[in-house]
Amino acid sequence: MITNDLAALYRSEFPLFEKLTYVNSCSHGALANSVKAAFGTYISTLEEKGSAWNDWVTQQEILRKLIAQFLSAKSEEIAITTSASAGVNALATALNFSGKRNKIITTNNEFPTMGQIWHAQESRGAKVVHIPSNADLTVDTQSLINAIDEETLLVAIAHVCYRNGVRTDIQPIIEAAHKMGALVVLDAYQSVGSLSLNVNEINADFIVGGLQKYMLAVPGVGFMYARQSTTSALIPTVTGWFAAEDIFAMKIDSYQPAQHARRFENGTPNVAPLYPATAALEFMLKVGILNIEKYVAEIHSEIRDGITKIGGKVVTPANPEYHGSLLAVASKDEHAHVAALEEIGIVTSCRDGNVRISPHFYNNQDDVKKVIDGFTKTSALLRT
Ligand SMILES: Cc1ncc(COP(=O)(O)O)c(C=O)c1O
Image 1 (cartoon, rainbow, N blue to C red):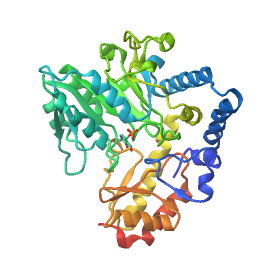
Image 2 (cartoon, helix red, strand yellow; image 1 turned 120 degrees about the vertical axis):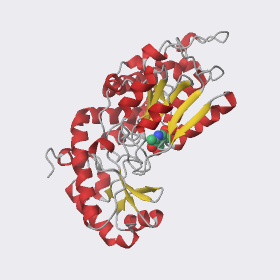
Image 3 (tube, rainbow, N blue to C red; image 1 turned 180 degrees about the horizontal axis):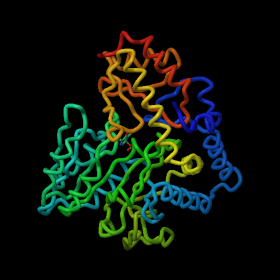
């Protein structure tokens, strides 16, 4: 039974639910009225001022502050990027793989970006080690910890896996990496906005994510948290004037990167999405991430019970410590399954033999019922 019904409070802000049963926040969040209105604020700057650089740069700083507040970080520890990949790429260019410490330890539960970017560094001397997952799809934490040695420069791990919803027990991994003198980058894209994240408790050196999924914003804005005490010596070689200590010094004859996280940015920000992203962050802060985490866990568990009752197989671990919002249901033909659900108004997505259901705080009991009914109607496609 739902205890603190967030959907009852906020669902009317999301017109999408008048038309669809939308449970695909792992791909893109539903559009809130305030986020939609914020696009208009950007358009107004164009209509009223033409070139509104002061407004745009100010908007970026407002967003930086809100992201910092959301993650319990300091503003100067947040780089605003155009994607999660952009942050990780900037970090990769700041690392030196020519010495003894040249190993990147990663897992098989990563989004492709996190494999591809590190493999791209092989031409610069990086050695990438993938730790295979356990049979239940969880990360083999002990093997990962055992693999971290004195040659390890960086451990690159995802918090929640985009494919199967597995949440990794990140704390012992981060501790082990630091004990060995290695850095950690955490890909939090599938957890930010659905699980509470406090950078001081997590203690990773870098945390990357984007704002278009559980954070309710739109494509084109991401973030990278960079922990000052361990990252201030790293100088990216992919850079630009917005990464400079003084953006408007307009110096062409030297390179003075910003002291803190902003050094991982580069050229002109993606200005238009800064506005909806700001409205989205304000919305998320109003709802409260602790409320969201609790509510989403209840909805997740109701959907899981319903799918299991009709004979479906949820491949995401049942232990609440090993999953986030996303639950993955085994399917004989995941693309046909998503299409069949869409025909009856239920929006999901799929990866790797599974249909992904990813509820958020705007999903209610009626959605849960419709999702279970939808999987019952399409039960011929369930892989049991
Ligand atoms: C876990 C995870 N990491 C990274 C990405 C990619 O992010 P971007 O396209 O912003 O680089 C995604 C996108 O779905 C994701 O789910």
